[in-house]
Length: 321
Image 1: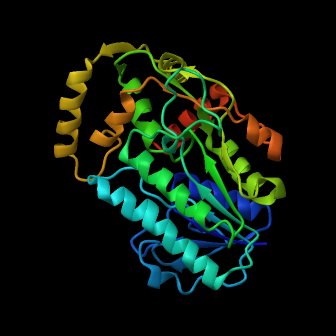
Image 2: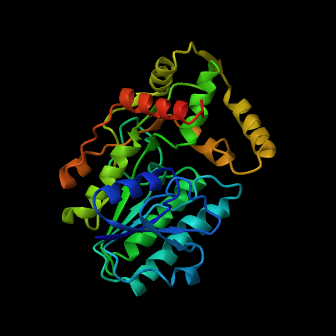
């Protein structure tokens, strides 16, 4: 089996590449010439230099692909229009290239996000029948990219996956929280609730969805099946770090000021930004993945206790903490 992976040099993509190789896939990684190949160096992969934002650069896509895993996307940006340029236009360019160059693919997997559906407004976990109501530009761009995918479903067999917050080794977003807690404090602006998914479980789910015929044409939430408060997550990390934590209450108006300061001081796009602030104004980011269990037997294996420990161990080993 031959697979093309976009976003292969990133956190989730590099884990997916490793698992595909273990399963015997021949893997081609689409990477920009400016991408850092650190996480896939030394792996038995072919590197195809190109950019989903540049349709002409996709003309060398192999014609004999069996699967395409589209993970490339922009989650942080200084300008809202950048989300749509990368997440929507880039997806459209890739779909056109695959349709022209490798129309015989067995599945095109598009990794979207819970942000495309938005928060739960009534406190109940969202399922696939919930009306999408994204609140951030990132979420709106991911929802629009899903629309692009579904418009191509008659030409290509497609599947859309919407994970919640994903964590694990190599992740830099959760690392921000680990680093704050290591210093003994965390910002608190009220009780919130989240679905989570450890990266290994996500990667298994991605491959299972690709290989399962019944998942063709579908859209699925993936999660570990539990709901966590922000305090649950903080306590799990604090226990692993063996650190006493001080809660720093931050009024929401002050959050806006802190975000502006962070953006001015930062050299690049940060996880602490005005677009993310739109999401932080909502307290329930939860989803129900029972449809994935029904259609392709997705059952998460990693508990938050195990996942947080393994993540912290990796951060320590690599001297991030």
